[in-house]
Image (cartoon, rainbow, N blue to C red; front, side):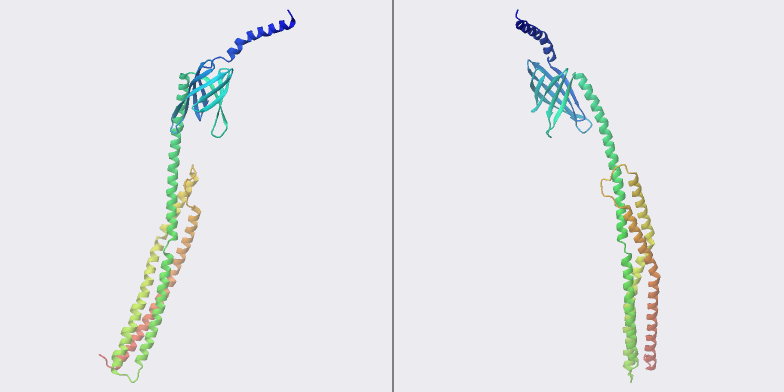
Length: 349
């Protein structure tokens, strides 16, 4: 036999000897497989094989977000050529290779990346046990998440309520009527000055009427009494009286506000401290805008300064009012004496 013929016979013999091994390496892949792609999903693949043709089903189980799972099933068709596998499941194209007893596949994603999936041999019973354990862990995790969310909501509601209360406190301070009361008191004092000036003019006019010569009985008994009893008295009772009432109403309102100012200040201090403590011990980030504790305390400082200034002004303003009233009374006494003297000399009845 020629050497070349001998070599060909040897090669053919080795090929026959290796053929069973190759066939065994790429044998049937029919069976059940699982790909553990958690926490995204669990994949259960069943395949049957007829020659090079493959068919079966792919069950995709994912978390339903409520502590359980939801599954979808897609029919599978495909083929195997040597160790290369090509599958279609629900319109998705998967391809890969047989690797020992496992199947390595890759699938496209919506982002364009390829998702690597390794399917390991399993049984329905083993898969169900795996799924049961996952569902249990999902239920535990969901329960913990629900409890956590409830705790976060409760904490946020508490902080929001404290913040809202502090905002109301600040609004109370900023909207205080102390400046309005002071302005009313100032207006009353200015009006008293005007009334006093008018009474002074009325007295001068009365004195001119009383100094008329010759003095007629009508002048003495009608004109002069009218100048005092009507003109001066109107300026005193109506003009000055209204001005004094304006002042006193403002003063009464102011004193009431100042008497309540410690209560207002104490409430804001208490609410600011409560909010600061809640924020300091908070486990979660507040979900809403929170009132500024420092800003509230700054407003409280301004309010206290305003109240202290108003309290200090009351005695000075009252002293001014007392002096104006005293001057007005003195002018009225003087006018009364002038009118009485004229009436006495004219023997007016």
